[in-house]
Image 1 (cartoon, rainbow, N blue to C red):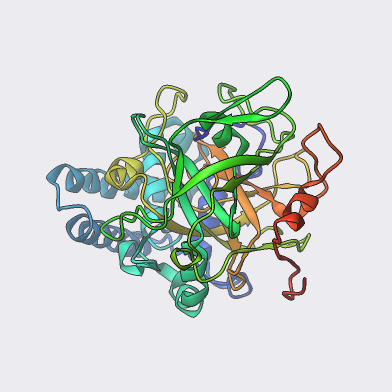
Image 2 (image 1 turned 30 degrees about the vertical axis):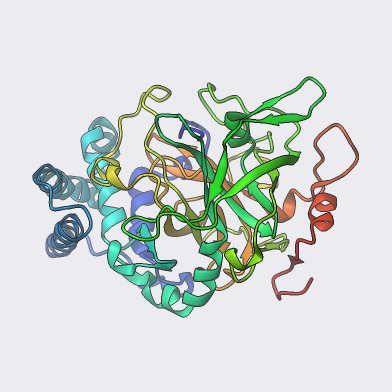
Length: 410
C-alpha cells in the first residue's frame, strides 16, 4: 500500500484550514444544491451540541464495535477537550493557532470523521452497516442505493500476501469475471517486473472478497494469474510526494473460479468524462491499512488510533470530489472521503451510479488539510503500457468490460 505522503501543492491546501473544515462540516452528507443555507453552527451552543454528538457517537462505537476499551474512551476524552478549542479557532479563523498545534488538528480531523460529515462504515455480511459510524446526512443516499452498494461491495476484494506482517498489499475490484483493477504500486509489492516489461507474480498471492469486521471472513478467494496491463512508469514508493503524472493503475487476470461463488454482477466502468467535478458526492470501497510509520513523518491521527483494530477490513466511506492538484493530468482528481491511511486500489463510485467503477484511489496527503487522490478511469482509457500500441480501452474490451456513460449507455 502506498503511504499517504505530503504534497505541498494541492487543492485542499489552496483553502485556509478554517475554510476547508467549514466546507466539510457544511456538507455533512447533504446534496450540494441544498447547502446554501446549511453553514455549520459554530456558536458556543452549536459547538457544544456538535461535540456532544461526537462524544456520544464515539462512546457508542467504542462500546458496540471496539470492545469498550478504556484507552479508547481516554482518546475520546482528549478529542472532546481539544475539539472545543479547535472549533473555536475555526470560528475565529485563527490559522496560526491551528497550524501551530497539531494536536488540535488531529482532534478536528476526528470530529469531521465522527460527526457524520465524513464517516467510514463497516461492510458486514455484504451490506453497509450505517450503525458502525455516525451517518450524518448520508443515510438517505446509502439506504436508497443499498442494492447497488451490495453488488458493488461484492466486487471489492483484499489482495492477500502470505508471510508478511500486515498480511495484505491493498485492494482490487472486479470489472469482469476474471479481471481486477488495482494500483501499479500495489502490483509492484506483489510482483517483479522483468527487463522486458513482463511481470512475475509472487507465489501464494490471492484476492479475497470477504475480510469483514465481525462479518464474513472469506469470500471466493481467487489466485492471481497474470498481469494484463500496467501504467508505463514505475511508482516511487519512497518519494516524499506523489508524482501525479504517473498512471498508478494495473489490470490483473485471475485464475478461473466457479461462477456460482462470484458476485451477482461485475462493475461496469464509468467512462463519462466529466463526473469528477468538484463537489460530486462519491463512495470509496476498500480495505484501509495501518499507517506506515516508517515512511512518513506524520504520526497516526487520533481517529486512526481509535480504529486501528479494524484495519484490513472492508469499509465504505463517502466524500466529495475536490479540485485536482494544480498541474495534474486530466485523469487525476482529489477527494476527501475517509481512507484511514491507506485504501490503495479502492474503487470510487458516484453516488446514485454505484453500478460502475468511476475512479481508482491511489494515495493521499498526511499533513493538514488531508485529502486523497484518485484516477478518473474514463480519462485514462487511451493510455498504453509504453511497450505496445494497445490501449487500456483495448484491454478492457478484450475482457468484455462494459464501458458506460452517465446515462448507462454502452
